[in-house]
Image (cartoon, rainbow, N blue to C red; front, side, top):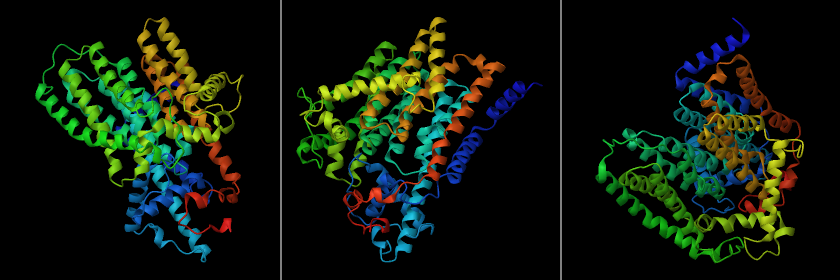
Length: 536
């Protein structure tokens, strides 16, 4: 047996193993990677955001109100609070609330307490990244129907720069990206379900809506990908069959619409109150322009509704199923937004309701010279920055024109591009368009994120799309995994991504930052703690 055949046999045997064991193995590999490299770094290495997020977990445990609203981070604070309480109850975490922190006079005990808190947060990040990768791989499997491709996609995501960065620190991006990417995959799986599984499709759409609401309450940047979901549903839809038995008829549609209405009323009130409180935001909001402030939220809602209705019309879905799908989405989004009521704070509602103005605040701080005189969000300065971001994103893909910040998944993107071109020439133009849509969406997100300086962790939003694009292409060319030469290239690419994913974490362990660089902002974002020893 040749080496290539042996590799093929090994891959096939691995893919035939019980799926739960593959998922468990993927999670173990991810945990081993983080525990080996980066887990024991000092608690102040990623002070922004590690210390701020840990601080809010302690605040919530003491029943104190939220103080940080940049993202706004709300759902993450609920999760980290619950995680700290659980570990403390199990005797694994000595301190779980702010009032129990050792005094700074006992510097050793205080540092040990913070180290244990941050390491507990990193353990949570390991669990969340593993859950993200496993869920992603499972949904890709449901979408493409090939275990081998799903497993390779899961490995690429697990060790891509996005999750390798997220798994070694505490960040709100992780939950937000995990929620909205999972929502995208749920929508794609739902719109391709056969008619006799309409109940499963409705459940997927409702869950997708819930995850979008949670993603927005965690980090409002999730809205960019969320707005692409209606287009994705339209592009990836599949014509319904003529028989629609077992879908519950109008009775289920009516129940869903009633439930959606019940949930939507308080959710709409919550958003309306956030819009009304626009002037009370803790940050200096500027109007969007063209009279859109306070109105674009309705445009977004209409965009989603139009997407569902248009999908039903194009793919000939019966009206009752289209209305049921719309009701499921509304119900899910409403329930996701109503999570804000668990620990209600006016600033969270304001940030989520006025997400464009909220994001512009931080963009204007980063690009003060270009946006300082801009009296509204939409203006020449912002458009020029966005154009530069698009140019930078495209130039990076050539490597030659922009050799810095080359994405780890660029070979995967090239494969998706070449594969899409091949499928187009072969006559499978819709498949090619679908793959290109996913890839262009990833590039569009990267261009938008450049307005705040594209960080490694932001790749948690973009890597899944590029990988999914490549997986979608590969699923239409299954012979590549059976060809010895092509298989070697594919498996070599996966191995390259895994190796490259560890370069940055290893470099980081050898060159620690100066902790005093954080001392300027810590009193502002953590006012209830005494100055850390490195700031005194």
